[in-house]
Image (tube, each protein chain N blue to C red):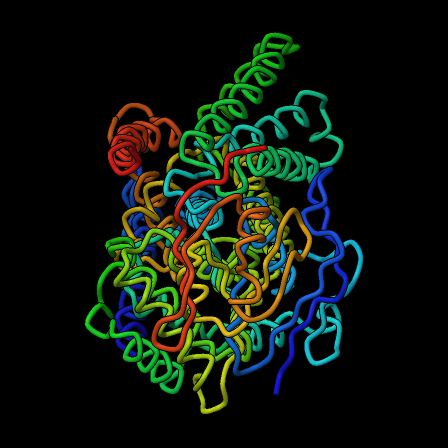
Length: 333
Length: 265
């Protein structure tokens, strides 16, 4: 069981990284807080100002970064395994954009004020439509070119409709809010956002984690997987549902945070022996760690203001994506 | 003794009837060659036998039980399927690819254990690829990949193996090698009892040389069935394949050597 021991070590290391990122997210910011004081404040004693900063600002932000990163990481790994293509990712193929569109529509019609759960549900419905579109356009062993074209089409459609909402926005405030969704950020999120998104993301991550064996078998193609006893229709349904839950809820509260699901599985694939099933949980942990660290960077790089988290991940992820496209062009003559 | 049989099945793909009233069967211990020109319905018949496509009419039965009534995992354990498209999509080590053959034998949450690894190792041993165990599966030559995929199927220890053109793209040496393995599998099997093997072939020389029984498909129907010499007659080669061939016997087996096209009438 050499696999087993090495895999356990990898997951342990990633979990430690998540823990460090989470602690850093609590301790670091415009006001640096000693970690011991931070824990003390969270669990009930300490100065009121400190409690306020931690419970109202930093804790929800850290929880959201962890959950959203895990959701994006595992969604990327699951999409890549299912489509058998290392370039599949919620942002690249447009699922994040349709999720954001769903949230924007809910917001635009003022549904969120009347019924707070409408926000994650809108994101979820949008993301589900996005996954279906991508599957319909590029599902059956489609080539990289087909997948990228599908992503361009879905992104363009979602972008156009979001732009429509933007141009018809009733007030400058609404315009600003919609732009925030397109840029993606974790600034000023409260525990309300956590409770709106967390249950959906957790459910999505758990559903996606059950895909491991089916994705392993899909390495040999759909017919071989089916002949090995994999229920392909059930697998597809769980993929759509899990991705919609994880990405939809994440996008509904934080906007579009791209490329986490692309970069993380790519970095970890070799370390799990290229097994798409083993990549799932590893990518959830890796995504959580990366998002926590990226969010820390987003608030620390500039001293007088914050960079949007979505902008930062895009700045890192897009060149990465270009390199991967070049690489796949070389291997696919 | 296991018997997998298609009786009077019709499969429609889109508007076209890929199979129209086809009956065919395979039993443990025999190597059956499924032959016919391009588009005759060979792959569709094999997929129907594997339970991957449900016939629109007729039934496929495994030991008299309709395939549709047999659970997915049970079916996967008893029927092995080697698809024509042998792409291995990720750079997994060869041993992990072979180990996938054990998936139907694992419980929902089990990992492959020592016995599964031993079975996978002996399948690799049998196909002489033990030294490839750690090689990334995306970096294999055609002959190596064919053996790795066959080892994957053997690791599942199926009662019936359905192989779709396992020798496509291989040189003569490796064609003979794969066919010898399939013949041995039919005769000896993986665990003492012989395995029933259906193999789709375009190479008529191999079909005549290795299969005791051939099923010839043409335009979705069975054109002939029986021993190679009965099936591959000059008249049928002319009408079904539109070729002329040199035929004869050597070393106790028939041979067929496609020689020239029959000009269209």
